[in-house]
Amino acid sequence: PSVYGMEVINSPTTDYTDIGGLNKQITELKETVELPLTKPDKFKEIGIEPPKGILLYGPPGTGKTLMAKAVANKTEASFIKVVGSELVQKYIGEGARLVREVFKLAEEKSPSIIFIDELDAIGARRQKSSTSGDREVQRTLMQLLSEMDGFDARGEVKLIGATNRPDILDKALLRPGRFDRIIKVPMPDKDARQQIFDIHTRNMNLEDDISLEKISSMTEEHSGADIKAITTEAGMLAIRNDRNKVKMEDFLKAVEKVKESNPAEQFGEA
Ligand code: ATP
Figure: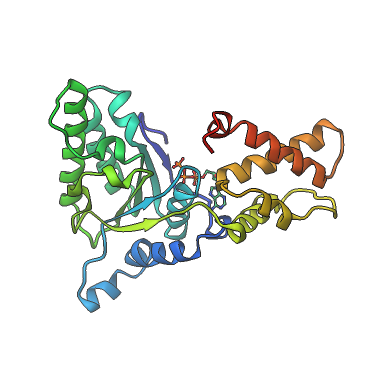
């Protein structure tokens, strides 16, 4: 069921094997989110509180949402996604109420993972200036902090926040018992890019001349989302030319096309 303002997936199908190049990050995710849900007794036995929330940070399109979905899948948890900017922009005066409802829903559908994308849109450091928009953001943030403080770390609700601006976050969000684990999700290096190409071409009909290794070397500064776009574009070229296999040439053209459509490149900033 989809509730206004949030995306709810009962148990996502994304798997850890759908994620390229983030092995270290996935191990950390398993320890901090998966293990407390699957083996809560371990934490009890040792006598420590598992984290309630972890923060994933890094550039757009690098796999933060994928990681959150994969852990929800692995733990058979409901996945509830909200987007920070939508909480405070689309529904003026409704941000705090929505936050309350998200936590209520998470409790009802537990085990659950609450994924807050663009956390910085509601969690930026408080400023002195105070427009009505700022006040809306603040009320929403206060509600989030109070909801986080109100639930049990040993329970079956976990929070995953995502941002590409960890530097502007209000320190209150990062205190113990809130988002107290921080995991960096970087742009993929060459090996990671090759793994991501492998994943996204798994079901593609490829000609023998294709070297994903070579394409991976050519795509520095490309995110996982860019790589996905390249594979789709290469497939489109084969279809357009009425072929049933994708050729190296399609990939080379697709790389060019995706570079052109990257706004940073267009304005010469890349
Ligand atoms: P944003 O900050 O823009 O929300 P994100 O980091 O959450 O970005 P995702 O939504 O996880 O990015 O990635 C977008 C798409 O790009 C994914 O659905 C997937 O197809 C592809 N992708 C991104 N990163 C990876 C990766 N590491 N491995 C495989 N595919 C990836």
